[in-house]
Image 1 (cartoon, helix red, strand yellow):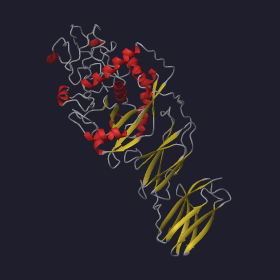
Image 2 (image 1 turned 45 degrees about the vertical axis):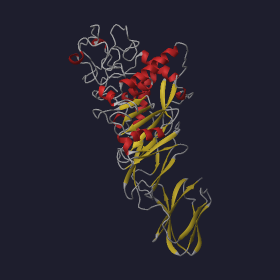
Image 3 (image 1 turned 90 degrees about the horizontal axis):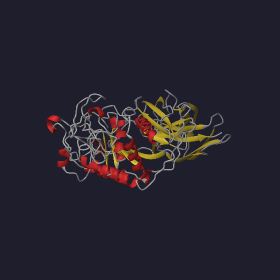
Image 4 (image 1 turned 90 degrees about the vertical axis):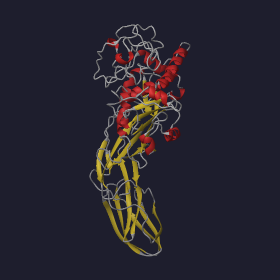
Length: 509
């Protein structure tokens, strides 16, 4: 992820404490990178005897697992996940690889894993393996997003585990601006080691390691030579990633100027590739090398579970989102059940809807994915007489990057939508839906008589009808005309001194 002093922690159940100590503050261990390097070299050998021809874009599925605390707090801002995925596709576009969400977000409640998803090493959390293994899905790249990833410096940003074949990202790294973290970790997923493999956690220092650099790195991997004579097996095994002995660690900019002599005494400083995604130069990443791209393609070709025949629609949305209900700034009839309605957007296959107490959606956001319609209800997440905000984003599998995110506010009412009239034995409201010219029948069976008001509200909280009545012992029927109501959802509320009874009814035309 190429961050100064921000090192990757990768996981393993069998690496000893000695190995972690050897790597100091490093994250992904030399041993783990050797595992993916060996897979890369095997892919390379297999490619000699096979021909893979990609005729178009390969759509690769990703399953995002969003960790939250046991109370539902401390989770990532969901819109930032969309933004990050869009930026990721820009980074991989020149390889004809694009990523899409296999399914809606998988919300995982675990304070323990949210705070520490590490398995193995000094920061081991055995419970994380149980939770994450249970949540992992087949036929997708599994990415877990957590609040924190404890590491040697407390600054770990993400990791890939070759043992469990999943990725973990720290919540702070989820945004379009910081997408290079995920781009880097997916490089590991597709068999790319660091170009400084063997120097992980122990950056070259002539006062410590000698001048010129030693033949073997501190991690035991051969030190890459400038003349390219050992490039196929030294360091990351690529000849077009030039010698790098962890030069980005602590370097303040994207222009490396130190003189560093390789074991042959040749200065490798001028050849350093600060822009490489797998290096550690902060904010410099823009590219993979051709050999790295070939390794990514070869690994994807050897992962049939990730290969799809999809041809997804990437055309941008041209319509803005129109939110119908709740109306901006108005009050809803109920507080514990709120329905949200919007106009369909051409090309959208689903919608992402989120509500929160803050307009930044950073307090306690509640979210839902909606497919097959333009209406959704949230229940038992609101307080009475409070202001909330809701936003909606149209989605299509091949394009999460366009489409306005419309956001408005509303205030909850004071009525609770529950059966709370002690005299009522049962009730029905029919027909539902109710069509043009039909009467709406409100039927209630009671064990005692009581006075009540039958109110009809629209979803913005406006009272459209008010009928005062008395319900006698036994069954009482009241009929309401709906001819003056437009098509849509309405709340029927029966209110008495002893409680409130509410139902939803849909009017068709």
